[in-house]
Structure formats: C-alpha cells, structure tokens
Image 1 (cartoon, rainbow, N blue to C red):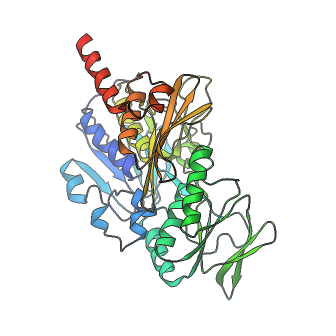
Image 2: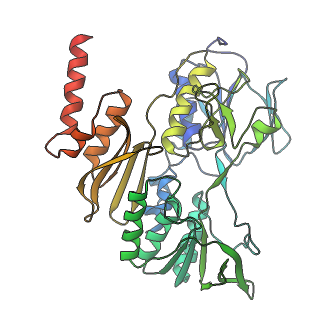
Image 3: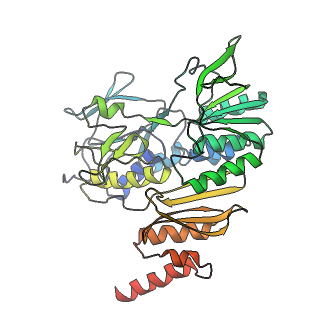
Length: 423
C-alpha cells in the first residue's frame, strides 16, 4: 500500500461535492492530511443533504438553509477550497491531473471520484420531453413543485423508493396519481414480497392507482405539452404531470475514460480503492468487489457514500479502513417510516414482530438459522437493535424474534456487557 506524506506541493482533489465528496474532504483532514484540498462541485450550491428532495421537501417550499451541510465559510474554515459550478471532464493519470470543462488542468496528489449518478430517461418516444420531471437535485425539486402546483393528474413511472415517495407526496397534495411499474410488485428490487404487499396496500388505501406488470410505450404530447402515457398493452392514462423514477445510471465516465475498470460503476475494493493507488471512488458511481471472484455489489444510499468516503480517505493516506458495516436505508411515505438493514436476498424464513395491519411491525429475514437483515415499519427500536446485532456479528435466532417478550435491545446490551468483561 502506498504510504503518503501528510503534505505535498499537490492538493487532494475531489470530483463531486455531494454528501460523499464532503465526507471525503473532512475525512482526509481526520486522517492527517495537512495540505490543500480542492472540492469541485457541478452545482451552484455548497454540499447539501439530498434525501429530503424526494420526501418532505416536496410537501412545502424548500428552505435551502435546512439542507445545506456546510456553507462556503464553514468549508473554508476546514481548509477546503470549494469550487462550485465546475465540472471535471477528464483525468490524466500519467501526469496526475484532472481536466476541467474550461480546459484548465489541476494537478492532484490523490483523487476522489464522487460523481454520483444521473437519472435514467424514459426510453420511449417523447421520453425526453422537457416537461417530464426526474428528481435528483435542488433544481429538479423546484421544477417538480412548480409543475405539481399546476397539475391535477400525475403519472409516476417506476415503483422504486423514489417513485413511491413521490406518489405519496402527490396524494398528500390531493392529486390523482397512477404509478406504472413493469414488475409485478412495488419496490420489487429492494424489499421482500411481504413489504411489497404492505406498501401496495398502503398506497391503494390512500387512493393511488397501481398499474403493475405494465410499461410505458409512449409519452403522449399535444401542442408541445405532455398529456399522459400510452402503455404497452394499449391503455392510455391521461396526466398533466409525468414523473420518471426508474433509477439512475452511474456517472462513471471519468473512471472509464481514464482506463479504470468499470462495470455499471467504477470498480473499487472494500477500501474504495481503484486499480490506481492515487485514485479512489465512492458512492453511486461505484461497484464494489468485496472479495476476488465475488459478484460486484452496488449500493445507492447515503450510508454507502459516507462509509466509502471514510475508507477512501484512509486509503489515500496509505491506511486500511474497509467498509464493513451492515448496509442500511430508510424511506418516508405518508406517516410510515421504513428502515431496513442488512439484506433479504436468499432468505428462506421471515419472522415478524408487531402489527402488520396497523403498519407497525418488523420483518426479520433468516437463511436457516443465520440472521440476514430486517425491515421495520414505525419500529425504530427493532431497527437499531438489528443494526447492532449485524454490525457486531451477534447471534439472533428466529425463536427470539418470534417471542415479543424478548427485548432485542436488552439482548444487545447484555452481549456488549459480556464482551467488555472478557476484553
């Protein structure tokens, strides 16, 4: 592993000023880097918190001060040279320079690629019409708010988390909403059938129409305005507003053009390292090879970006700090908070606690006797206990979960106490 001095005549450069890019800059300071840090951001704003953009920020006017993480003065106080409205378009690995859209070149000591992803466009006739909304940044959220105020009927294409969160916001604004999804269930790529069925019921109870096993064949346009969609089965759904929520494409062009291996993202190891010892990559633009020969894994979450940023900063300083925590995620829809940790993939048993009908329960996933992960609806204590159990490698049995008298938090505390006494 390349050892690096804590100061050189070249700066550490970060391409991408999202939450992961900010964390990388701050983590470099914590890892002992005393030299210059340059944080390039394509947007006009200082680093800000993105999750609210598809949640509460759609329900009321957006207060930018509530989501900005570090303003320019705060960044300067940490010795971080923030440069907004600046796009990095290339990397010269031989000279260790990044190339900016202006044509200027910036040398680097180490480079963090934190370019995130771009929203997929609808791959159908009129699918790139400018009236179609796709939320990724502050400007997108503002465009959505303006369009929603003028709309009565909304079609949301895609029943992933972003699509379902937007559908909930539209219903809370008393709009008529139809969600079109090609899969047979909502949230199909992220949650178990139990959670899918629960959220389908929740949305239908709130008045959302679900067009499952359906795909958009064409966006209908009249007089240069979108008027709805035509589905592959011939049905036509009228709409004043169309929202595309069909996922993102990793923005891995910098890595790809620089000759770094990419496969639906820049390939990194568990310490966020690329094949170039002077370059790490973090967040939505990456695909992780946890072990040689294992399938590549992609996580699109704030936690993943933050933890990769910490491990990547350490790697640039020549230290080993792999991202080992169990992945977790959350979603707010109506008054229901879903919190997930671990995975439900390959589970063969689901054990529930709580009230499924009342949307206050947890589903714990097991493969044999191995605890894989949990999904909790309005059960924060269950979620926190599950995270600690997975992070600490603790044993949890289906029988313990099934018995509501067993306090999972108390189990964690007992295990922590026992571990401390034997340390």
